[in-house]
Image: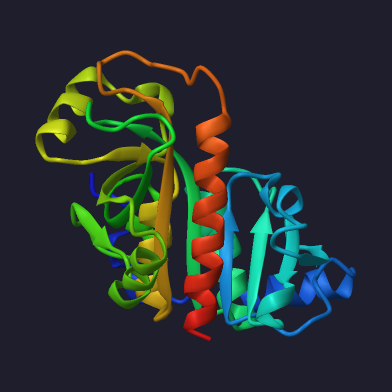
Length: 255
């Protein structure tokens, strides 16, 4: 059996459109009453925009399945969406709506599990490509092992986060089915981290003709074939703060 089950779907016309969802949200007063920013941070660390609001001032302008902020210093050009959940389906659905609204550049900040013994909890990884081991990306593009980040936006991230690891990620829908054999295989291939969203974002961005890149903070470790939890959150929090600032700067540079 092929996947997706209907292999000719890529040229098909969808029944439901993100423009219609936006219209519905606006009708019920559930959509920000501002112009779309050109760049957007998809922030999976929910408290980060409010936690850093004194260092990086933001204005909360509404909700779109999560909390939507504009970065004051960017004068409407960069937004942050947070507190919307996890996983490829929700990220893809929200990104579709944001693209339909007018957003052109995306950086996702995600939690991940370190696969390499050289990585430590709190390390920052800029991901240039993602293994498509989730489902969403296969509804946008025919099957291939990898999908790549936007090169130009990724360069901007690298310039703003010089002391980071550059590498690849494994995107999966099933965190409790990350098997030892898979970890060993992906270690041998040099894959740095595992997470649940990035391949879907990259595939969607490629199809829709927008830019997308990603930063992962290693929040736990699978490299020793057991789940190693962080002893505390200090380094993880500090790394998310650095990644957040860098993502905003990279998106603002492209505005």
